[in-house]
Amino acid sequence: MTTIYKVLGRDEWEKALARGVFEGSEVDRRDGFIHFSAAQQLRETVRRHFTARPDLILAAVDSSVLGPDLKWEESRGGDLFPHLYSVLSLDKITQAAPLPWLGETHDFPVDIPA
Image 1: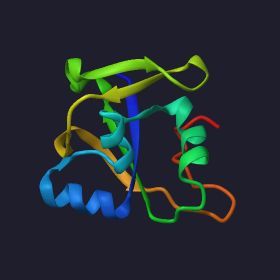
Image 2: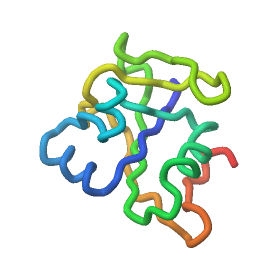
Image 3: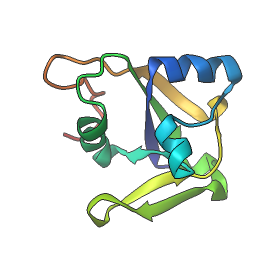
């Protein structure tokens, strides 16, 4: 099992809860897939795209349950990132929790590599 992560704004999370699915952020819809990060990529993704946002939710998903719609594709620096070419049913999320902003960085779960 490989856990992958999606960072969502609280407003996106609340809309997904109401619908039962996450259809992607504005950037996801523009790119044609839902962007995820592996654990070792997560801190850099948050630093680049979500710095100082206090309203974040971190959702964890077991990548093995996403089937063939999940593709690992080359992106930043040649690293392979997980991209989901479908909506994300919320029943696939194994854990979701706030990702608090501490003033200089976000407060990541202890199992996310530094």
